[in-house]
Length: 397
Image (tube, rainbow, N blue to C red; front, side):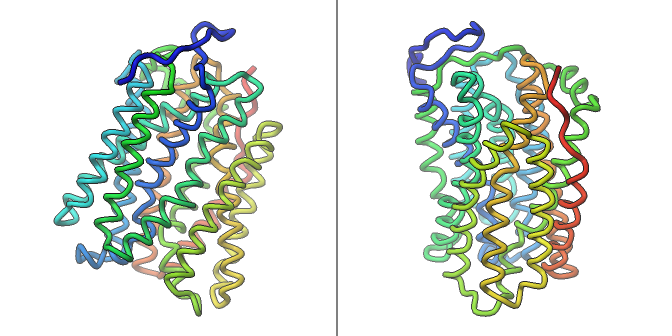
């Protein structure tokens, strides 16, 4: 680790302000980019991954399901385990572990070793999101928190813009193993950046299991957690198997598919910042609007599959809308709990997100293998529309 970054004291003496606050925010965005790139990499590699390991597309999809399950457990428990450990050190260690897991995935001789490596990825995903999701408020002035949170969460969409398409392209050009080697490089670079620009970040208050249980039992949070769970489960039930869906669209070749994935990520970046601005004013209404629009767009992909232009437009709308989900959820979360409970609440939401990712990928795989990939779209649309009336909670008093 590098020496301590110079800091200035903020109005809250438990939250040191870094000398380069936006460099610190960008480093956190780099961490979210790395974990999401590695997590989502199998989406563009399912066909070659299944062929290379001699398993079905549904079985290959376990490479996405397993990290989600592990992350779901890690997210709430890691803050408990590390207690007061400097969050800068925790994040650096997680990025180094992510690089090691990427390399082990690339060397996997069979599905068993690959899944073991992907379990390590799950530890990194859960840990990074539990720690990083709520750190923007400790790094920048209050007036800039919404924008900084959007930057941190933009790593999700940038992974779709750069990470997943690049991995898909590399997998087609050089084989899926090289696609897993590549993400290790930015993971190592981001670990160094985090060590250099983050200030000391001890826990504001140690996260205890009892605090997690208390928050999880709060009616205020349960409504929002249910809505998020439904929406994210539906999204990943369909998005994990979007390639088999789009491969049935006439005139769609591999080049067009990669272009669509790139466009999906680009509009997702825009959606992140648009939703961040809207959610800063009204997170409940923003989330509900996203849920209704997502359900409608995904449902329309079913009749549109005979048309490449219609499918392309709908996929881009999907990317724009889903780009705003995470930042909208984090915005209402920050307002719904006391300052002392922020990290515990972030850990709960990170655990829920990853449970939903795993459940969605697993369910989508089973439906895709038995009823065809269109059934996953119908499930996703249903869950998204069901989520819309189950709105997020009001702000904390």
